[in-house]
Amino acid sequence: MNQAKSYLKNEIARLDGLIKALQGETDTEMKELAKEEVEKLQKQKQELEDSLNSSNSGVKTDSEENPLDTINPNVTTLEIRSGTGGDEAGLFASDLYRMYFRYGEKQNWKFEEINRSKNEADGIKTISVDIRGKDVYKLLKNESGVHRVQRVPVTESGGRIHTSTATVAILPKLKKISIEIKPADLKWDFFRSGGKGGQNVNKVSTAVRLTHIPTGTIVECQEERFQGKNRDKALEVLNSRLFNMMQEQAVKSITDIRTSQVGTGERNEKIRTYNYPQDRVTDHRLGKNWHSIGMMMDGEIGKMLEDCSTLSQ
Image 1 (cartoon, one colour):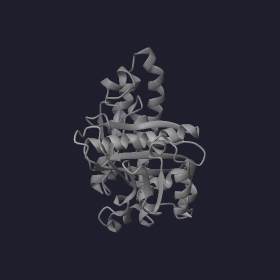
Image 2 (image 1 turned 90 degrees about the vertical axis):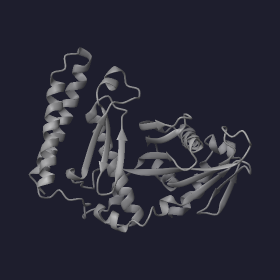
Image 3 (image 1 turned 120 degrees about the horizontal axis):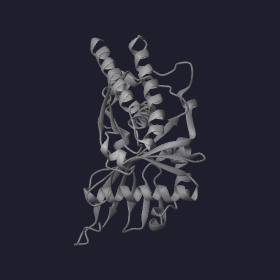
Image 4 (image 1 turned 180 degrees about the vertical axis):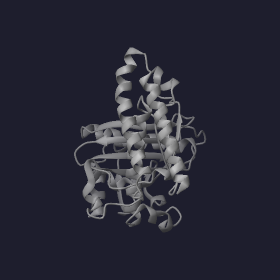
């Protein structure tokens, strides 16, 4: 308990320092943005002070409402990670993202990147994207799992077929916070963003890495110009991930997740194979095949998503 109090006091002191630094901003362009940032940091500081003075800072869900009722059907977070297969896995992860993006374009969905990292072949190591559109969560929720590709990589000179994987996660967005997370269970790291955003992003440690210590869940966010906004987004994504873990493992609180984990669980079993030589996509849960893989990877996946919707009925 003393360790938790010490952590909270350190965080409050750190936020105080950020507030003072922003209030001393002299650049005309940055002043207005800094004002908004200060307000958010002051709110975060107040929340931490409330946590310090409250004994009710456990991790739990609201027992008076059904958590499923808090899901926003028109917003979701798509996360894709390259798996086994080296550079080819990263290229496959990029292809999967393009597939969902092209389909989303046809549905008039809006995509907002939270974080992206690339491998040496310019493929995706990890990407997190918020997607907004009608029934987006309902349409995509059955895409979570390990996707496998079988094809001849562009880097393969001998014409051999390789097998690589990428993991897709579809995280729900909650209409309101339904999970309480102990501040002492959070580890924050801050670093300089290497992405877009201009001079300010690159010279100040605005990027955020958030670790939820009990579950080992890590969230990175670096797309916003200010640290406070990235902190807000990271907490939002963490909340969605923990909720998703609860749903997948059929537990009622975050504290039950670790004890109910067995290995890596169903999430690590392949759900789908994209076989290029045979021009076939196979969903192993349905035992169903679709052809014209080139068109599907170009976003023509409406029929597949419709067929997969029966998995959650």
